[in-house]
Image (cartoon, rainbow over all chains, first blue to last red; front, side):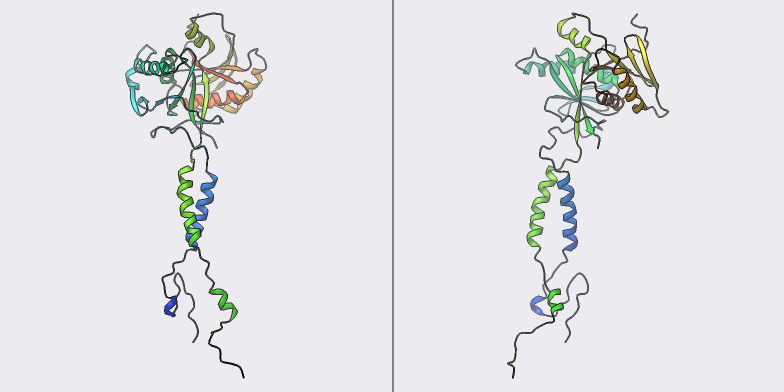
Amino acid sequence: MPRPQRTGRFSEVDDPERSAFRPQLTSLIDMMTFLLVFLIKSFSVDGNIITPAANLELPISTAQTKPRVTTSIEVSKTDVMVDGRSLAKIVAFINVDSLLIPAVYQWMNAQHSLYADSIEKHEVLIQADRETEYAVLKRIMFSCSKAGFTDFTVLAQKKE
Amino acid sequence: MSSPSFVKHRPPSEEAAEIDVDVSPMISMFLILLPFLVSMAVLTQLTILEFGLPPNVSAGLAAGGGEMPKLKLTVVVAPQFLGITFGDRLLDSLAALADGTYDLDRFATALKSRKMEVDANDEVVVASRDNIRLKNLVAVMDKCKSAGFARVGLSSATEDPRAGE
């Protein structure tokens, strides 16, 4: 009697010892191989040491400097934030003549006093939305500089 | 006379079709590797752009005044144009494009040629008007860095150039 041919996803075998369910795994392995290659390509030993706030669209830059851990301040479309906590609403200070944002100044001053060598200059990382206007940034920079932070970095998405 | 055989012999082609590779270890390895790699994958590469306050501002804040700062090449970023100035001289001016962006390649070429003419040619100040978006500022600062300026300062550009007189 001729053996039945394999017809598709499951083998039709009349031998009772070989009638176990045998799924076709080729497509699964293909998919996993593609996934593996893609993930190895985007693998980074360092990872990102900074996680930008979820609602920020960062500007795109060709700079090659890797982010470093430092005092950070986030500027969303509506708020100036620190560690996800709102320090000041943009609408509250954008039309005020004074460049100083008291809440930002107080917080940055507190951060500056944490450094043992607080006479030295320190750096602030600004994580701001790409649509943020300079009028907002200059008030933040002014408040930071009054607290002793005169070097700034802005977080950006690296251009491929 | 040949002895009767109890072993069923199949044709060689059919024997080959029956060989099954055991893929279970491979799938197990994939299942361990994939979650690990997914957790370590960096899908968005981040970078930082360094800048400072212009020397006269930061020095003024730190020491309350002092000697006069050296004159530096200044890039004025306004909604209508990009200007390159040195002191009170306007060296170059590029009009903004219709969509509000700038011709940054032309700007980079102009900046490189002006860089050779000034004394402090490792520093540039980007002076921005209030309503300029961060994405445009970052693009301009990127071009300044790529033109060979190691230090970039960011300051405000007055709406009225004669305001300080």
